[in-house]
Image 1: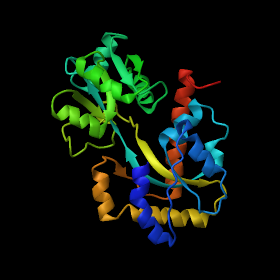
Image 2: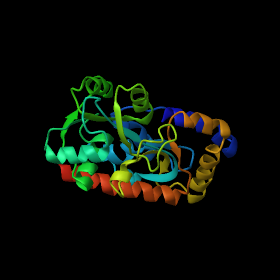
Image 3: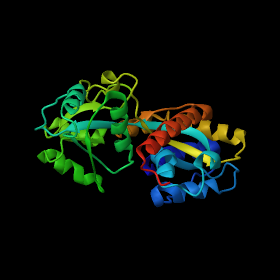
Image 4: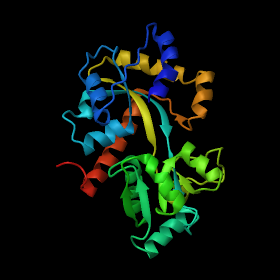
Length: 279
């Protein structure tokens, strides 16, 4: 998020005619930063760059003391991102379909690593369980960096990495790529299918977007939205974004609101169904 904010800030400042100051507020899975914006004056001068994890998953998983849906106003979606499903080179299935079929024939035998219960990756595999019948044993890791070594040695059969990290391991043959969660194939790995090619209608995208305090005047929201969209068209910004393997997703505040609402309803419902949210 910090990188994205800095890539857009200068162009936004020129467009808005005033400085854009980046103030990182880490902690509590994003609650500290998002609450600081939610309680700020709704004058259009304080906004937050959030992501699906801290405005959809974390508020449900951790039962935040405020409702992000009534405290924040969606301003502009910026970029979407996706992950790669990878397998140990010793694991026999070589495609997502073969993985799903194998898991059904061998219930609980496939160990799948994620960065924690209720994480974006865990919910992605639960969606695959729900939509395609993927059967697996969940192995949550406290630190994402621990997954790759266990995948390389075959201690864990399947996991998921960011596209850029996964590509590094796949290109030198240390891991086998099964699918990506993007809407379309990536030119860097044109032979790697999307999950939806195997499971029609499946979609699991992460995203980054700007939010303002509830009550911010619509005219201010529209002005910031336009500045964000124009900043994303800067050729130098586009060049740097390509190296991050994220996709530009310009649109109106209403477009972003629909994405946020749909993901909140879908993922919060899944979290409740799994019984992993605090009661």
